[in-house]
Length: 394
Image (cartoon, rainbow, N blue to C red; front, side, top):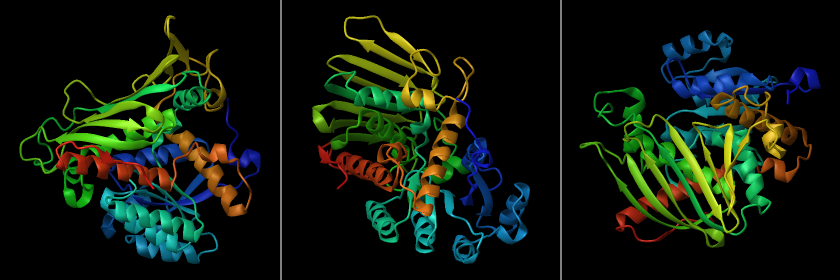
């Protein structure tokens, strides 16, 4: 499918600003790539760094007008809310501890929010964001970007349609090796803040990548975590927070499963996967091979469904930008998230109804809060020697 641009469909681009993501920041650039992909969104303002000099240089580097490059997100929220052409949504790509205060400032200003995971570092802050979003009647979306892969969406549809039968097991894992050495102690910027309790929160590995695995398992299976039993540990001596987590999960509907996260596993650059099994069939998806979905009916040979191919249906086909075997990947999945986010926010601001099932495909503030609850429950379980701990949100 070739997407029409905002200009071609007669829709105005959504005006957004960004907080964080200045020069040399990895994830900010990824968000900007994805924002541009479908021409649905225009980045017009930013508080890209708390350092005034870096903020100004970063804004100039990506072509923002000088008067719309800010060094303080609070000034940005106030100024943009007062402009007739001000931003309609803010994209938050800062370290974890800043997510809640920044989101709060923009919600209070009447601006919709798109926030990186985790939603917050504490469950209390997550609860407050859910309540404020509802009180202000705003849209708050969370960039759990793996939900934007075409074959992840198709897997979700297949589970919902009953193709796997009664679910018995739901597993997900996210395994990396980049923190195998103590690079955080050596001052490596990305590693240093992610292992700092003051900025990362209660857990390093779960807040950074474990929430992605948890969300993927819940998203595809349609199940919620009821209780968890966790073992969190630190493989690198002296590291301030955990870098490995093994979490057993009891899912709603009776399924059992695991969430495994590691950032000290040599040989794994970025290994994300989900495996779901029922009494009729099973399916598996891996982020390293995102265009393939392995589906197996019991008693039959496994079948590989290819994005854009003959077995690609529903969301798997709608989100296919290119024909089969014309590779799509990480940026395209991020782009799919942003394309749907733009549609949801524009419709909400215009008072146009959108299909609830379509909106449910994009993680929102409650989905973000579920991730925070999962992390908190796992940390509590680990502290209690792996005791089964309630994990459902609300």
